[in-house]
Length: 370
Image (tube, one colour):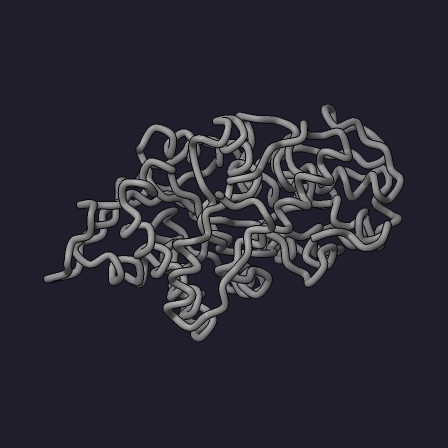
Protein backbone atom coordinates (compact mmCIF):
# COMPACT_ATOMS: atom_id res chain seq x y z
CA UNK A 1 0.00 0.00 0.00
CA UNK A 2 2.31 2.75 -1.17
CA UNK A 3 1.57 6.21 0.09
CA UNK A 4 0.86 8.57 -2.76
CA UNK A 5 1.53 11.84 -0.98
CA UNK A 6 3.44 13.24 2.00
CA UNK A 7 0.14 13.60 3.83
CA UNK A 8 -0.82 9.98 3.27
CA UNK A 9 2.67 8.83 4.19
CA UNK A 10 2.47 10.71 7.47
CA UNK A 11 -0.94 9.26 8.17
CA UNK A 12 0.02 5.70 7.45
CA UNK A 13 3.05 6.15 9.68
CA UNK A 14 0.65 6.33 12.59
CA UNK A 15 0.39 2.56 12.53
CA UNK A 16 4.11 1.83 12.85
CA UNK A 17 5.21 -1.32 14.64
CA UNK A 18 6.76 -1.75 18.05
CA UNK A 19 10.49 -1.37 18.51
CA UNK A 20 10.66 -4.01 21.18
CA UNK A 21 10.72 -7.79 20.81
CA UNK A 22 9.50 -10.12 23.51
CA UNK A 23 7.48 -7.87 25.82
CA UNK A 24 4.74 -6.60 23.56
CA UNK A 25 1.01 -7.14 23.78
CA UNK A 26 -1.06 -8.11 20.78
CA UNK A 27 -3.63 -5.54 19.76
CA UNK A 28 -2.79 -3.48 22.81
CA UNK A 29 -4.63 -5.58 25.36
CA UNK A 30 -2.12 -5.42 28.20
CA UNK A 31 0.51 -7.87 29.34
CA UNK A 32 -1.15 -9.87 32.08
CA UNK A 33 -0.64 -13.60 32.22
CA UNK A 34 -2.46 -15.68 29.68
CA UNK A 35 -5.34 -17.91 30.65
CA UNK A 36 -5.26 -21.47 29.39
CA UNK A 37 -8.85 -22.61 29.37
CA UNK A 38 -8.02 -26.04 27.99
CA UNK A 39 -11.55 -25.82 26.65
CA UNK A 40 -12.63 -28.70 24.45
CA UNK A 41 -15.46 -28.59 21.94
CA UNK A 42 -17.14 -31.94 21.39
CA UNK A 43 -16.65 -33.33 17.86
CA UNK A 44 -19.66 -33.50 15.61
CA UNK A 45 -21.64 -36.72 15.99
CA UNK A 46 -20.66 -39.21 13.31
CA UNK A 47 -18.32 -36.60 11.88
CA UNK A 48 -15.34 -37.79 9.87
CA UNK A 49 -12.06 -37.30 11.69
CA UNK A 50 -9.40 -35.43 9.75
CA UNK A 51 -5.65 -36.10 9.90
CA UNK A 52 -5.41 -34.90 13.52
CA UNK A 53 -7.47 -36.03 16.51
CA UNK A 54 -7.71 -32.44 17.69
CA UNK A 55 -6.65 -28.90 16.86
CA UNK A 56 -5.58 -26.44 19.56
CA UNK A 57 -6.79 -22.90 18.88
CA UNK A 58 -5.70 -19.75 20.74
CA UNK A 59 -7.26 -16.30 20.80
CA UNK A 60 -7.97 -13.29 23.01
CA UNK A 61 -11.23 -12.79 24.94
CA UNK A 62 -11.77 -9.52 23.11
CA UNK A 63 -13.96 -8.13 20.35
CA UNK A 64 -11.13 -7.76 17.84
CA UNK A 65 -11.02 -11.58 17.95
CA UNK A 66 -14.74 -11.80 17.17
CA UNK A 67 -14.27 -14.45 14.48
CA UNK A 68 -12.78 -16.88 16.98
CA UNK A 69 -15.24 -15.95 19.73
CA UNK A 70 -18.29 -16.43 17.52
CA UNK A 71 -16.93 -19.37 15.52
CA UNK A 72 -16.29 -21.39 18.67
CA UNK A 73 -19.45 -20.22 20.43
CA UNK A 74 -21.72 -21.10 17.50
CA UNK A 75 -19.97 -24.37 16.63
CA UNK A 76 -19.09 -23.14 13.15
CA UNK A 77 -15.49 -24.34 13.36
CA UNK A 78 -16.49 -27.70 14.78
CA UNK A 79 -18.98 -28.20 11.95
CA UNK A 80 -16.15 -27.99 9.43
CA UNK A 81 -13.80 -30.16 11.51
CA UNK A 82 -16.22 -33.05 11.86
CA UNK A 83 -14.72 -35.71 14.10
CA UNK A 84 -11.60 -33.67 14.87
CA UNK A 85 -12.13 -31.88 18.18
CA UNK A 86 -11.20 -28.31 19.10
CA UNK A 87 -9.24 -27.42 22.21
CA UNK A 88 -9.18 -23.71 23.04
CA UNK A 89 -6.94 -21.45 25.09
CA UNK A 90 -7.22 -17.69 25.60
CA UNK A 91 -4.42 -15.19 26.06
CA UNK A 92 -4.04 -11.60 27.21
CA UNK A 93 -0.65 -10.94 25.60
CA UNK A 94 0.77 -11.62 22.15
CA UNK A 95 4.16 -12.93 23.28
CA UNK A 96 2.46 -15.55 25.45
CA UNK A 97 0.48 -16.78 22.47
CA UNK A 98 3.59 -16.91 20.28
CA UNK A 99 5.39 -18.89 23.00
CA UNK A 100 2.46 -21.31 23.13
CA UNK A 101 2.55 -21.71 19.36
CA UNK A 102 6.30 -22.34 19.39
CA UNK A 103 5.92 -24.89 22.19
CA UNK A 104 3.10 -26.73 20.43
CA UNK A 105 0.57 -25.79 23.12
CA UNK A 106 -1.58 -24.30 20.36
CA UNK A 107 -1.58 -25.00 16.63
CA UNK A 108 -3.52 -22.04 15.22
CA UNK A 109 -4.03 -18.60 16.74
CA UNK A 110 -5.78 -15.27 16.29
CA UNK A 111 -3.27 -12.52 17.01
CA UNK A 112 -2.31 -8.92 16.31
CA UNK A 113 0.18 -7.82 13.62
CA UNK A 114 3.07 -6.84 15.86
CA UNK A 115 3.54 -10.14 17.72
CA UNK A 116 3.06 -12.04 14.46
CA UNK A 117 5.90 -10.08 12.87
CA UNK A 118 8.02 -10.34 16.01
CA UNK A 119 7.49 -14.08 16.21
CA UNK A 120 8.30 -14.58 12.55
CA UNK A 121 11.44 -12.44 12.47
CA UNK A 122 12.74 -13.62 15.82
CA UNK A 123 12.60 -17.22 14.58
CA UNK A 124 14.23 -16.19 11.29
CA UNK A 125 11.07 -17.17 9.45
CA UNK A 126 10.85 -20.67 10.91
CA UNK A 127 8.02 -20.53 13.46
CA UNK A 128 4.77 -19.41 11.89
CA UNK A 129 2.83 -18.35 8.82
CA UNK A 130 0.01 -15.86 8.57
CA UNK A 131 -2.75 -17.79 6.81
CA UNK A 132 -5.67 -15.38 6.89
CA UNK A 133 -7.20 -12.17 8.08
CA UNK A 134 -9.80 -11.68 10.76
CA UNK A 135 -10.42 -8.03 11.67
CA UNK A 136 -9.73 -4.41 10.80
CA UNK A 137 -10.25 -1.21 12.79
CA UNK A 138 -11.43 -0.75 16.35
CA UNK A 139 -8.76 1.70 17.57
CA UNK A 140 -9.63 5.24 18.71
CA UNK A 141 -8.29 8.32 20.46
CA UNK A 142 -10.86 9.15 23.14
CA UNK A 143 -10.51 12.29 25.28
CA UNK A 144 -12.24 14.28 27.98
CA UNK A 145 -13.97 16.92 25.83
CA UNK A 146 -13.77 19.51 28.61
CA UNK A 147 -9.99 19.21 28.85
CA UNK A 148 -9.29 18.42 25.20
CA UNK A 149 -11.87 20.15 22.99
CA UNK A 150 -9.67 19.84 19.87
CA UNK A 151 -6.53 18.18 18.53
CA UNK A 152 -4.47 21.30 19.24
CA UNK A 153 -5.53 21.12 22.90
CA UNK A 154 -3.69 17.79 23.32
CA UNK A 155 -0.44 19.63 24.01
CA UNK A 156 0.56 19.23 27.65
CA UNK A 157 -2.10 16.60 28.34
CA UNK A 158 -1.72 13.07 29.74
CA UNK A 159 -2.82 10.49 27.19
CA UNK A 160 -2.74 6.76 27.90
CA UNK A 161 -1.64 3.93 25.64
CA UNK A 162 -1.78 0.25 26.65
CA UNK A 163 1.94 -0.49 26.94
CA UNK A 164 5.36 0.86 26.03
CA UNK A 165 6.14 -0.17 22.47
CA UNK A 166 2.85 -1.92 21.72
CA UNK A 167 0.95 -1.33 18.48
CA UNK A 168 -1.22 1.51 19.75
CA UNK A 169 1.65 3.13 21.67
CA UNK A 170 3.83 3.37 18.58
CA UNK A 171 0.90 4.47 16.42
CA UNK A 172 0.21 7.33 18.82
CA UNK A 173 3.89 8.33 19.07
CA UNK A 174 4.17 8.46 15.30
CA UNK A 175 0.93 10.38 14.91
CA UNK A 176 2.22 12.93 17.44
CA UNK A 177 5.50 13.18 15.51
CA UNK A 178 3.51 13.82 12.35
CA UNK A 179 1.83 16.73 14.14
CA UNK A 180 5.28 18.16 14.95
CA UNK A 181 5.18 17.36 18.67
CA UNK A 182 8.20 15.82 20.37
CA UNK A 183 7.92 12.96 22.87
CA UNK A 184 10.66 10.79 24.35
CA UNK A 185 9.61 7.28 23.34
CA UNK A 186 11.00 5.57 26.43
CA UNK A 187 9.75 7.89 29.16
CA UNK A 188 6.67 9.16 27.35
CA UNK A 189 7.52 12.72 28.44
CA UNK A 190 7.21 15.57 25.98
CA UNK A 191 4.81 17.99 24.37
CA UNK A 192 2.13 15.39 25.09
CA UNK A 193 2.70 13.02 28.03
CA UNK A 194 2.18 9.41 26.99
CA UNK A 195 1.13 7.38 30.03
CA UNK A 196 1.41 3.60 29.63
CA UNK A 197 -1.61 2.11 31.37
CA UNK A 198 -3.11 -1.37 31.26
CA UNK A 199 -6.47 -1.30 29.49
CA UNK A 200 -8.12 -2.82 32.56
CA UNK A 201 -7.08 0.26 34.55
CA UNK A 202 -7.57 2.93 31.89
CA UNK A 203 -11.33 3.54 32.43
CA UNK A 204 -10.83 4.16 36.16
CA UNK A 205 -7.83 6.40 35.46
CA UNK A 206 -9.95 8.37 33.00
CA UNK A 207 -12.82 8.64 35.46
CA UNK A 208 -10.50 9.90 38.22
CA UNK A 209 -8.93 12.48 35.92
CA UNK A 210 -5.39 11.14 36.17
CA UNK A 211 -5.39 10.81 32.37
CA UNK A 212 -7.06 13.15 29.91
CA UNK A 213 -7.64 10.58 27.20
CA UNK A 214 -6.30 7.41 25.60
CA UNK A 215 -5.33 5.91 22.23
CA UNK A 216 -6.82 2.45 22.75
CA UNK A 217 -8.56 -0.47 21.04
CA UNK A 218 -12.12 -1.60 21.57
CA UNK A 219 -13.87 -2.15 23.84
CA UNK A 220 -11.73 0.13 26.04
CA UNK A 221 -12.43 3.08 23.74
CA UNK A 222 -16.19 2.67 24.10
CA UNK A 223 -15.82 2.22 27.87
CA UNK A 224 -14.23 5.68 27.96
CA UNK A 225 -17.03 7.12 25.84
CA UNK A 226 -19.53 5.63 28.28
CA UNK A 227 -17.69 7.56 31.02
CA UNK A 228 -18.22 10.85 29.16
CA UNK A 229 -15.32 10.70 26.73
CA UNK A 230 -15.41 11.86 23.12
CA UNK A 231 -13.82 10.17 20.11
CA UNK A 232 -11.31 12.70 18.83
CA UNK A 233 -9.89 10.41 16.15
CA UNK A 234 -10.61 6.97 14.71
CA UNK A 235 -7.41 5.33 13.46
CA UNK A 236 -9.31 3.90 10.50
CA UNK A 237 -9.56 7.45 9.14
CA UNK A 238 -5.75 7.52 8.84
CA UNK A 239 -5.69 4.65 6.37
CA UNK A 240 -6.55 4.51 2.68
CA UNK A 241 -9.88 2.66 2.32
CA UNK A 242 -10.18 2.99 6.13
CA UNK A 243 -8.83 -0.52 6.62
CA UNK A 244 -5.76 -1.79 8.48
CA UNK A 245 -4.98 -5.15 9.99
CA UNK A 246 -5.72 -5.51 13.70
CA UNK A 247 -6.07 -9.32 13.89
CA UNK A 248 -4.62 -12.11 11.73
CA UNK A 249 -4.75 -15.91 11.81
CA UNK A 250 -1.41 -17.67 12.29
CA UNK A 251 -0.40 -21.33 12.27
CA UNK A 252 2.74 -23.18 13.25
CA UNK A 253 4.63 -24.23 10.15
CA UNK A 254 4.94 -27.75 11.54
CA UNK A 255 1.18 -28.12 11.96
CA UNK A 256 0.52 -26.63 8.53
CA UNK A 257 2.87 -29.13 6.92
CA UNK A 258 1.55 -32.15 8.83
CA UNK A 259 -2.18 -31.33 8.85
CA UNK A 260 -3.13 -29.17 5.85
CA UNK A 261 -6.66 -30.62 5.85
CA UNK A 262 -7.24 -29.45 9.43
CA UNK A 263 -5.88 -25.98 8.64
CA UNK A 264 -8.16 -25.77 5.62
CA UNK A 265 -11.16 -26.81 7.74
CA UNK A 266 -10.42 -24.10 10.34
CA UNK A 267 -10.07 -21.52 7.58
CA UNK A 268 -13.36 -22.63 6.05
CA UNK A 269 -14.93 -22.23 9.47
CA UNK A 270 -13.41 -18.75 9.76
CA UNK A 271 -14.71 -17.66 6.36
CA UNK A 272 -18.18 -19.00 7.11
CA UNK A 273 -18.13 -17.37 10.54
CA UNK A 274 -17.26 -13.99 9.03
CA UNK A 275 -20.03 -14.49 6.50
CA UNK A 276 -22.50 -15.29 9.30
CA UNK A 277 -21.37 -12.28 11.31
CA UNK A 278 -21.98 -10.04 8.29
CA UNK A 279 -25.42 -11.51 7.65
CA UNK A 280 -26.53 -11.56 11.30
CA UNK A 281 -24.75 -8.66 13.04
CA UNK A 282 -27.06 -8.46 16.05
CA UNK A 283 -27.03 -12.21 16.68
CA UNK A 284 -23.27 -12.28 16.20
CA UNK A 285 -22.80 -9.41 18.65
CA UNK A 286 -24.88 -11.27 21.23
CA UNK A 287 -22.90 -14.45 20.55
CA UNK A 288 -19.57 -12.66 21.02
CA UNK A 289 -20.82 -11.11 24.26
CA UNK A 290 -21.99 -14.51 25.51
CA UNK A 291 -18.54 -15.90 24.76
CA UNK A 292 -16.91 -13.01 26.63
CA UNK A 293 -19.17 -13.62 29.63
CA UNK A 294 -18.22 -17.30 29.59
CA UNK A 295 -14.51 -16.47 29.46
CA UNK A 296 -14.37 -13.47 31.79
CA UNK A 297 -17.47 -13.88 33.92
CA UNK A 298 -18.95 -10.59 32.78
CA UNK A 299 -20.71 -9.45 29.62
CA UNK A 300 -20.21 -5.99 28.16
CA UNK A 301 -23.08 -3.50 28.70
CA UNK A 302 -25.00 -2.28 25.67
CA UNK A 303 -23.52 1.23 25.79
CA UNK A 304 -20.08 -0.33 25.36
CA UNK A 305 -20.56 -3.29 23.05
CA UNK A 306 -22.91 -1.54 20.59
CA UNK A 307 -20.47 1.20 19.42
CA UNK A 308 -17.46 -1.09 19.80
CA UNK A 309 -19.00 -3.76 17.60
CA UNK A 310 -19.78 -1.26 14.86
CA UNK A 311 -16.20 -0.04 14.66
CA UNK A 312 -14.66 -3.49 14.08
CA UNK A 313 -14.90 -5.13 10.68
CA UNK A 314 -14.41 -8.88 10.40
CA UNK A 315 -12.89 -9.98 7.11
CA UNK A 316 -10.98 -12.79 5.44
CA UNK A 317 -8.36 -10.61 3.75
CA UNK A 318 -5.22 -10.24 5.92
CA UNK A 319 -4.63 -6.79 4.40
CA UNK A 320 -1.03 -7.75 3.76
CA UNK A 321 -0.15 -4.41 2.21
CA UNK A 322 -1.02 -2.61 5.44
CA UNK A 323 1.30 -4.90 7.37
CA UNK A 324 4.13 -4.00 5.01
CA UNK A 325 3.26 -0.31 5.32
CA UNK A 326 3.42 -0.55 9.09
CA UNK A 327 6.87 -2.09 8.92
CA UNK A 328 8.12 0.38 6.30
CA UNK A 329 7.08 3.41 8.28
CA UNK A 330 8.42 2.01 11.55
CA UNK A 331 11.80 1.54 9.88
CA UNK A 332 11.71 5.06 8.44
CA UNK A 333 10.94 6.39 11.89
CA UNK A 334 13.93 4.55 13.34
CA UNK A 335 11.74 2.41 15.59
CA UNK A 336 12.45 -0.98 14.07
CA UNK A 337 15.34 -2.66 12.30
CA UNK A 338 14.26 -3.55 8.79
CA UNK A 339 12.54 -6.96 9.07
CA UNK A 340 12.59 -9.51 6.27
CA UNK A 341 8.92 -10.39 5.95
CA UNK A 342 9.16 -12.45 2.78
CA UNK A 343 7.46 -15.75 3.38
CA UNK A 344 5.40 -14.62 6.36
CA UNK A 345 2.18 -15.35 4.45
CA UNK A 346 0.87 -18.62 3.06
CA UNK A 347 -2.53 -17.77 1.67
CA UNK A 348 -2.88 -20.79 -0.62
CA UNK A 349 -5.15 -22.70 1.81
CA UNK A 350 -7.36 -19.63 2.34
CA UNK A 351 -7.60 -18.90 -1.37
CA UNK A 352 -8.54 -22.52 -2.01
CA UNK A 353 -11.39 -22.14 0.49
CA UNK A 354 -12.46 -18.77 -0.92
CA UNK A 355 -12.50 -20.12 -4.46
CA UNK A 356 -14.57 -23.14 -3.44
CA UNK A 357 -17.12 -20.81 -1.84
CA UNK A 358 -17.27 -18.50 -4.86
CA UNK A 359 -15.48 -15.65 -3.10
CA UNK A 360 -12.64 -13.50 -4.48
CA UNK A 361 -9.10 -14.56 -3.61
CA UNK A 362 -6.82 -12.33 -1.54
CA UNK A 363 -3.21 -11.21 -2.05
CA UNK A 364 -0.06 -11.36 0.03
CA UNK A 365 1.56 -8.09 -1.18
CA UNK A 366 4.60 -10.04 -2.35
CA UNK A 367 5.25 -11.46 1.12
CA UNK A 368 4.08 -14.99 0.47
CA UNK A 369 5.98 -18.27 0.41
CA UNK A 370 7.63 -19.10 -2.88
